[in-house]
Length: 87
Image (cartoon, helix red, strand yellow):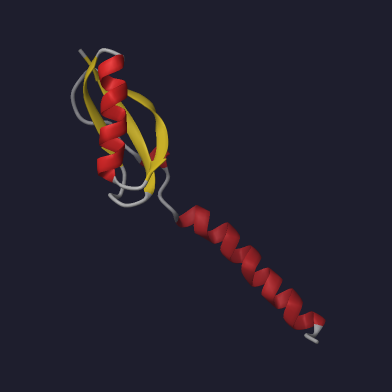
């Protein structure tokens, strides 16, 4: 049976990690839209990769009368900030 001291130490370590990881991770709020007028931020969505983001958002782009889509993320499974360009 583990001592209370080791249990408390483990709980504190897990709690500290749970707080530190989100504070050090990049957030979608740090993303910047492409340069030039006409770009609209439409949201942030988690995709498996950049290609999936571009594919899914291109369908929305066609339906909503936009002429270009830009996904800002790290390239892997990530939350991508999606920008659409007005026609």
